[in-house]
Length: 150
Image (cartoon, rainbow, N blue to C red; front, side, top):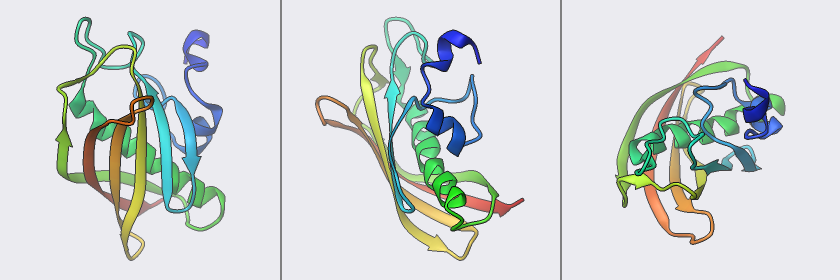
């Protein structure tokens, strides 16, 4: 990670999830508990997948949601609630985005709430992406994540 971009990422995010540049997409931890998390994403020319004069395509929002939901597992592991595992995004249901691109200059608030657990191997999360200042909901989905023990 370059020194310039290190400041783009909250140290707590780096401690909770294994993602690193160029595929670390969430910037600041806002909240994390054993069942919910939220993170801030800064949309600017440094953001992965940024397209000049457009922004970031909203399909990238699925990964914003996936990384934000991974914060929950990182928190659970750190608190001794679960064992270490690999998480695989298996799918998304009802992904809906109200805009084609997240615009330059936007700060996005990504929120995830654990919806269900099936044993130790499958988790689902309800997720939203909203404009940080406007509060306008821009995208929603339900993610399914497979947990494989290490």
